Structures are given as structure tokens and as C-alpha cells.
Amino acid sequence: MASAKRDIRHIIDSFSEDLILIAQDIAREQVARAVTEWQAKNQKVLAKKSVQDEKALRNQKAMERIERVAARRREREEKKATERALRLEQRLVTKKEPTERKPRRGLLAEDAVKKEPTPPPLFVHKRRRDGEIQQLKRGDEEATVAAASTSAAPAAATNGAAVAAPGEQLRLGL
Image (cartoon, rainbow, N blue to C red):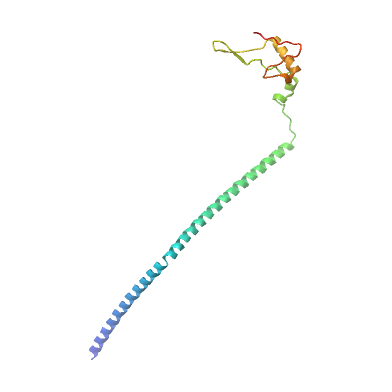
């Protein structure tokens, strides 16, 4: 009898172990089926969520990039402002110091204003028949007549040629 009880218990134990394994398999299958059904139903929601996550990540990176660019721009502007302020300060310091004026050159120089202006040339050049260009020069008499006429009537000059004052005749060497 003891051996029959032991055999029955052994059969029941193996049967219960088999039932437990079968129940675990069924539970796994049902869980897997429920997960796939939930994913199928919520696939659009998951896709939207993943797209939103990607967009959020891209936006965050873009904002960081924009902030870095703005910070660099601010630094450049501050640097330029400090350089401008330094230059302005240097200019003010140099202006406060007494400076000697340099003599002017050109049309406003004292020597240029005091000297009589030279008459404009009658002709710039003359072309010969063989094609060679000859520079024309005034004679001494023509230079004095032209100088007198330009100082007497500077507004009467037309097209670079001086107009003779009344009573004087311009001699042209033809």
C-alpha cells in the first residue's frame, strides 16, 4: 500500500507539473497576443510619440545652436564696442594734446594761393599727317597774353581756351 500511495502521489505531482507548464505557456501566449493587439491599436499613437520625440530633440539641438550663435555674436559686438571705445578714447587723448599744424598742400596752400595761376593750355596735342602726336607749347608772348586774359576775365574762359580782353588780340600761329 505504501508503494501504491507513493506511485499515485508521483503521478499526481508529475501531472500537476505538466498542468503548471501548460498554464504558463497559455499565459505567455495570451500576454504576447494582448501586447500585439495593443501595439496594433496604438501603433499610430506610438508613431506620433516617436516623431514628437525626434522633433523635440531636433528643436532642442536647434535652440542650443541658436543660443551658441547668439552668444558668439554678442561677444563679437562687445569686443567691437570695446575696441571702438578704446579708439575714441585714444582720439580724445591725441586731440587734447597740442598739435602743430602741418603746412597744407595743393590748392589751399599759402604758396599756391599767392602765385598767379598758370594759363590752361590752348591745345593738348596735335596730330601730324604721318600719325605722330606732337605736344604743343605756348610761346612767351602767348603765355603773357593768356595769363593777363585769364586774370582779367576768369569767368569768360570756355572749353579750356582763354578769351582775350577787349583791345587785345590773340595771335594764333597758323
